[in-house]
Image (cartoon, rainbow, N blue to C red; front, side):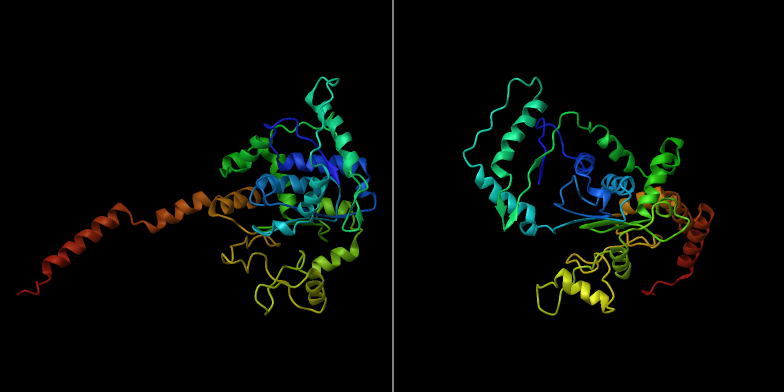
Length: 334
């Protein structure tokens, strides 16, 4: 378990901050020397939601920079976060520090140093404690000399734009290239995002870094490049376990399409992308088509609207013919 303090209440949590923290933890603990697949379970708050293209970009950047074979992010549906093992564990950890007061060391001039020293004291209460027969390895993540998290909101606003002139600007060439690389390997739905290496020899990224977790990737490809999707059985309000779904996939049962069995109904997905990419709104679809496929949907809509609208000459002809017909018609009263 890794703990990181917030320096102030005004410091907002963003996906960039979380990814940089995970990167720092992975580098210090040598995670990816022998690991090539990483699964992240989180809440579906605004700093993690798959509805934000900036969050998708940050997850894809983490997948690319660490040369992972697969990066899987998933969250619990609203109302089911009580099943999150982290929340269950923290209820136990909170009880261990009841009535505990952590004093900030005044010898540190900055609040960052004071909070980092408080983490060392907090570690004494939680380190090597047992929870559900598992020993907790508690490690502090110090904010001193950490990364600065500036520019996320500006970058998020830029990705919200769907103007073809803005997207094709030379300033955004690097962002557009990276985003296209990430989304060619991305599966997105309401509560799931994954990035998986492909077998395309023309792919610049996947051809340079061959796959090492071959069994895991073969299983994911058997499931249409994403994990076995939750599916309700004949028993009402009951879902098969992950192992039951995995055995079903290995026996030849097709995997369910993401977001096809939601209570709110199935959502539209991109028909141009090879992997399932779910749209959350018309604006989301327009941004995706402009950034990834360079399709100016707004201009196409205008052309369709202009083509479907009759011209002024045809309007005059239509009205004159309509008036002539009305003059020739005899009233039913006579």
